[in-house]
Image (cartoon, rainbow, N blue to C red):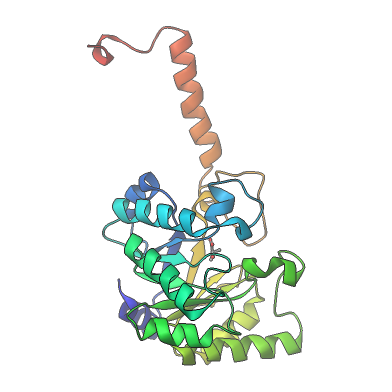
Length: 261
Ligand code: KIV
């Protein structure tokens, strides 16, 4: 997969698949699947570090998790999030942040929003760094948005979203994530753009879909937003495996001679 394959998939109406990934073991597992790409999302702050939002993600976190994923999934296209404010201080500091994430093993970077990012996107894409945009519910803006809320519910905000999507395309983004926008809005933006859209909570008519790995595996049964589908009951299955180990240690069934030296 490369940025041309994203474009080709849109043109051939073949769905793009993206899954978040934060660690070596999951990356090894995902490297054996057909997923088109992996996202080292700043959701890592929540899923792997237990923070309540993505504001807590840092460059140190993003570099370390990107490097682990790159070691585990050498055959996959890896997109990494530029974390909160890492691309808002100055062009020079943003370029340094981008360089560090690319050198950690990313193949492309994702950043949220448009206003004030156009020059940076142009600069990074013309410096060899493919950029994925992110519109709609942009979690780095939750304090501005008033929480994790569906976006694009008024005529005015739909107009703004369309203008923002076109601006990201013009700046050089190779794809755009649309998060938590009504399905009809996502469909209209997808039809408006030449570059592909990848949806999460954005209905079925985007060019691709992304989900957080813990959510699709059902590892967090208490977290059930409408847009998530658990494709397996990972929490119960893993717990059953752990319970079986504990039980067999207590009963003396494990270890046996074949497990001993
Ligand atoms: O950080 C993340 O996991 C994301 C996805 C929800 C698109 O940005």
